[in-house]
Length: 112
Image (cartoon, rainbow, N blue to C red):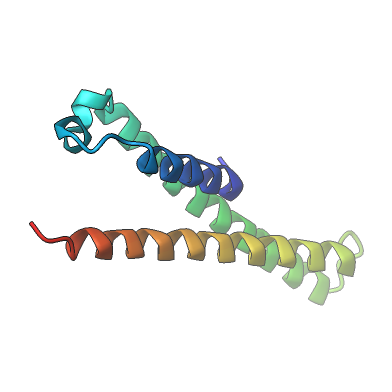
């Protein structure tokens, strides 16, 4: 799962959250059909996305090292593209983390 897919899922969740009813069923996720499998899928998706970002960064580092060592199989263009891909993926993941932290802080500051 890519970072774009995670951002898309977050947008869908935001849209669903604004359309929820204000009654007691809004407080109880089981009443809306949310089960444990769906919750673990988001965690798995987030873990996979972080793993992909890590993999992109490691690949970029490997390509940079190979270029510096004089490997004829690696071009500067490949290294620059890989570097930009890993940079964009990291920034997107950082934004997802920031949004999650903001959401957590909002929930924690809600009056009981």
